Length: 215
Image (cartoon, rainbow, N blue to C red):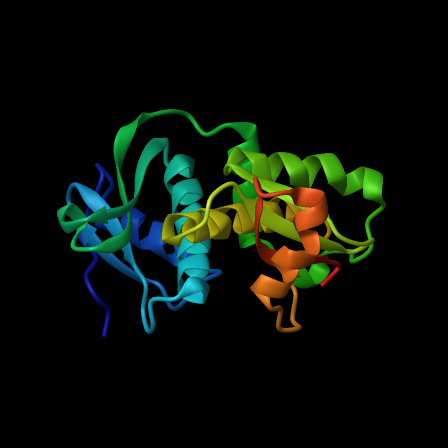
């Protein structure tokens, strides 16, 4: 049975369905509520760091998909009762033609990652991935030759959603250059990681997630 998706933000129902399909590409567990004036993202299952990171990844995908339709998304994190306690709400912030960077990220989102190479030269990714993180108000710290630590400037639920957006933009930016980046598979103790990196990061940056090149 096909579930009817209402139009939203000036887009027809079919266009909204396409936006949601892309948004869910990296975070199938995120629930969307579509209303005429806004699209809400809700975490499913336990409300914890992992679900908020996933919500951030889906939010970045949704933003890019909307930008691909010429919509400038206006995002509010943790908007409260005005958005039924959603993790994030997207409203219409105006109209703007998608930039070449947005179109490249959308192609990366739609790409088959198995075709990407796995071991890029440092010169090919350092500036690209650092800029991607900075766009989302985050910071990338090189921990080893193939291991990166994504940091935010604050702690808390909103920072974790922001980290999810930054993580996804970094992953997609890597894809535009033909190589893979993904979250580390081994469990990481955040408290131990933060203690380990405090001498070089100080108290300004908050490590959120470990990313691996070529993963």
